[in-house]
Image 1 (cartoon, rainbow, N blue to C red):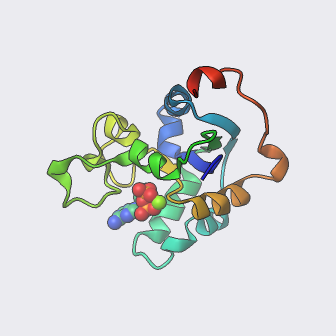
Image 2: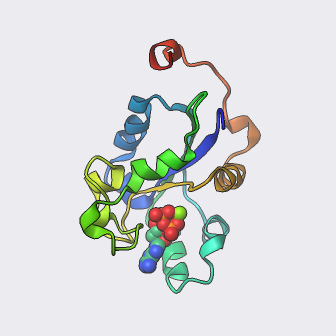
Length: 164
Ligand code: DAT
Ligand code: MG
């Protein structure tokens, strides 16, 4: 479970609201290493591939339409060296407060303060940030969004100050 990569994307609403830097900074602050980052205007076909798992859902077409026609997204990949981290990204993004256990986990209304969604948004279709939900989906998403040479290998000079 070492050096797992995650895929994080600031959605069009996050980019339009000027929150790209905030979101990148949140992950930097915790010690995640940014290994890929670019601004993209994805096509409808591309977003259909990204959200292929959800293709049978009633909200699929609206989601794809929104993601491909509301402005660019910022696609990123990160590593938290020597730590298992993909499950943690989810907590970061949207851990639920107890009062809202009956609300779908994706609804940012239920996201705890301190999480990215819990601090910046309130509506299901305007939840500002995507994070891969498992190691396998992260791999699939990184391969979809980035060419191999766009994912950079480098050492973080602050690493000994973050990791014992
Ligand atoms: P998450 O983004 O929390 O991983 P997901 O992968 O289940 O959630 O869904 C992807 C996106 O689809 C989500 O960010 C917003 C939209 N979505 C999910 N469930 C929805 C619903 N019931 N109605 C409308 N949009 C929905
Ligand atoms: Mg998801």
